[in-house]
Every structure is written in structure tokens, then in C-alpha cells.
Amino acid sequence: MEERKKNNRNLTMRAALLVRLVLVAALCSFFALAQQPARFYAQIDIDGIGPASLDRLKANPGFAWWVEMDQILVVLAEAPVLANLGKQQKVTVLRDIPVKPEQLSVLRFDHFRDVGALDAYVLGRGGRFALLQLRSTPPKTHHDGEHKHPLYFDAFQPNRVLAAQSANRVGARKRAVDPAIQALVNQVDGDRWLADVTTLAGWNRHSFGTEIDDARDWLVAQFSQIDGLTVSTEDFDLSGTTLQNVVARIDGTTTPDRWYVIGAHYDSTSNNTSAAAPGAEDNASGTAGVLEMARVLAAMEPESTIIFMCYSGEEQGLHGSQSHVNRLISDNDLDKVQIVLTMDMIGYTNDNDLDVLLETEQRVSWLVNLLETAAFDYTDLRSVVSYNPFGSDHIPYLNAGLDSLLVIENDYTSYPSYHRTTDTIQNVNLAMGRESLKMNVAVMADQIGFPRTRIPAWQPWLIRWRASPDASAPDQVVDRIINVLDFVSMVNDLNTAR
Image (cartoon, rainbow, N blue to C red; front, top):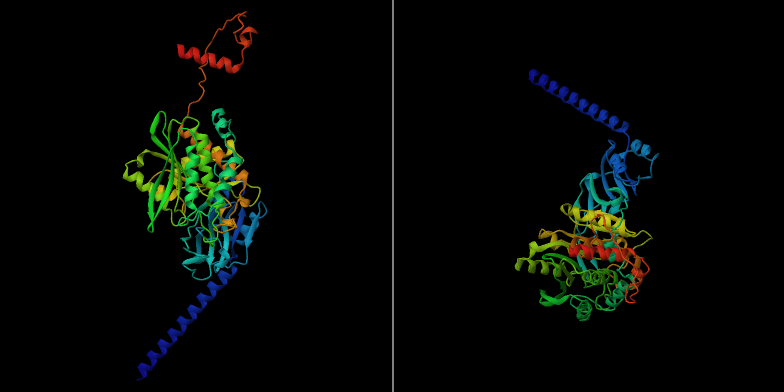
């Protein structure tokens, strides 16, 4: 019995010792944590700092992680690191947001704008995304008027680029423009584009309404007035209703089996479609853009085939563009398509910054580079890039493996009349739409190809003439004067004769 008591005392002593050790370890850990500097989320202003400076900033060893969002870099770092950075550039420390990285999530602005309706802290916004720290489980759907849309959240990934300024990707540069391209760019008529937006916004273009047929017929009539275009409609079924895409095509003169698609959806929606769905910005702006580009590009005698598409059923889930992809597949024409350029909401800006978002997959970066360069060379646009595509008519083509890209205003997420009966022409900015179209025309014209004035190879030429008493002789010959254009034309003729 005595031996058992002794063993029990030993066990008790050991247990007490173990408890003391655990308490000491906990206290040590507590004091160690107390001595560590506090960590905070912060927004660092990176507007136009350039690629080299941005790369150095991202490499800061004091960052736990970073997320690039257009004009800001959101980071998690210790207070001394942020204080030191604040001596060199603008740093906004988000002191009121408790640091709980396990609750971070990325929200897609897909049919949803009201971040304030979510129980979440907003760490930053850029492109078509918001970086959130959720306080509770968010709802799976969002109700807006007569619409019910799912909410889309992406898992948080550290060191991710959600949206990047072109000035921070490649650095600002201005090249000498191509005169032939510039001549086409100059043909973009902003007033004509805005007038077409106004006309389209006069109809309620809801996919299941009656006035969308009026918009369809008007588009057919407008395309039919453009020389060289063959115009048709393509039917597809949506919930038992037959809808139509409007298709205008011009075959290439030298490489007709190389196809370039330029598209936008012409249907619209609102929070009360039975009352009105003018959709001036979403998406009469893009549809009128397709029409304006058709006027310019069809007249250039394109070397490759251009297909101008106006889709219906986009607001119900990209049905018109998916129907076109299905048709390309069934007709074995998918491999002919070289580029698909889509425009969705190209005419709104909430400030004097004409900023456009170029959205596609990383594998289509070559096309992004062309558009960025054209924006620098031919327009007043500031371009932003996102390789996180979703939610518009470029998606069915990307899913089919095609090189497709969305052109959309960068202020898309702040447009207050999105899917509202107030989406009217008063909200559309002429300069924003015109500059976007100039960029698009510059790239697509160059890629499609068109006849350029031949410039002769440099070589010696000896030209002699004498004044002629013949009254029919050109004045420049009589006066022994010849202008540059006449000279180039004459040399071209001589080259042809040789």
C-alpha cells in the first residue's frame, strides 16, 4: 500500500512539473510574440512607377505577400517595413482591418457591384476584382431587381497580378506611327459611333422582349449599307425562344481562309426589363463599335476575311457567342479563326482618365502586347491588363482554344447605372469610345492586312523632261515641277513596267 502511495506521489509531482513546463513555454511564446512588430495590410501607390521600380518593390523581403491591382499593390508587412517605405512613396496602412489571412478571398465583379452588402473588409479593388477579408460566410447568390446571380469568389493566392498597368509592364514608349495605319485610325468617327449608341439605346433590347427585333433589323440594314459586306442572321434556341445573332462578313482578297472575328452583344437588361432596358453602355457602346469598325475596315480591301458579330442572349449566359463557337466547330471552321476581339462596355469613364482594360488568358499575351502598343501610339488611352478572364463573350472562344480578348472600360466596376433603367446615353463618353475604337482599328487592320502604297526600293533614278507647249500636259511638267506624290506614283509605274 505504501509503495502505491509513493508511486501516486511521483506521478502527481511529474504531472505538476509538466504543467509548469507547459506554462513556461506558453509564457515564453507570449513574450516572444509581444516583442514582434505588428503586421498590417497596406496599399502602396504604384501608379506609373515603371516595371523596374515595381519589380524592386515586389522583391522587398519584408513583404509576407503582395497582390497587384492596377494602381495599388496590396501587401502584408510589419509596421517598420511599411514605415520605411512611407518615406519614399505613398503607403496607406489599413490599421482598422485585423490581420486574418485565412479569411482572404477574391471577388469577381460578375453581375455584382455592391461590395458594401457583404460582411467583409475591402483591402483593394483593381480590374474586375476586389480583394476581401470575409467576416462571415458570404451568400451564394445576389438578387438585383428581377435578376438572381451567383456570386463568384476565387481562392486567395499570394504574389498574384489581378490587374496590371501597361506603364508598369513595359514602360511608356511612343513609336513613329505607320502612316497607312494612321490613315485608317483617322477614319474612326466618334460622333457617328455616339449617334449609333443613341439609336440602339432607344430600344428595350431584352433578349425575350419584342423591341430586340427592331434593333436586329436596324443592325442588318446598317451593315447592308457597307460595300462588300454579306449580311445574315444565325438562329439559336434559348429556353424555347429563337434568338438571332447578326453576322456581317467580307472575304479576304488574298488569304480568305484566315478569319478575324470582331464582336459585341446587342441585347440588354435592367433591374426592371418590363419598364425599360436601354443598355446604352451595356452594350450599345460595344455594338455600335462593331458597326463603326466595319465601316472603316471593310473599305480598306482586307486581305483576310473579317466576320462582324452582334450577339444576342449574352445577359442570360453568353448564349449568342457560344452558339457561334458551336457553329464554327460543326462547320470545321474553328482553325481558320486567328483573332476574336470582343467589346463590352467601352464608353464610360468616371474621371478624366481614359483607362481601358484588356482581358484574356496569359497565352494570348502577344495580342495584349499589340493592343498596348497601339494604345500608346495612336490613342490617349491608359491601358490595364488582366489575365483572369470571365463573364463576357470572349469566354466561349477562349474555352474553344481560340485567341480571344475582351476590350472593356477599366471603370466598369464603378458604373452606377450597370443593369439599370438609367443606363442611358447621358452616361456614355464620346472620347472613351472613340479612343478604344482607334486602338482596335490600328491592331486589327495591321493583323488582317490591306493594300499599302508601294514605296520603291532606294536606287538611283535619272529623270529628264522638257517644257511642252502641249496644252494637255500637266502643269507640273510644263513648269518643270513635280510633287512628291506624283514622283512616287511615277516610280511605281516604272517599277511595274520593269
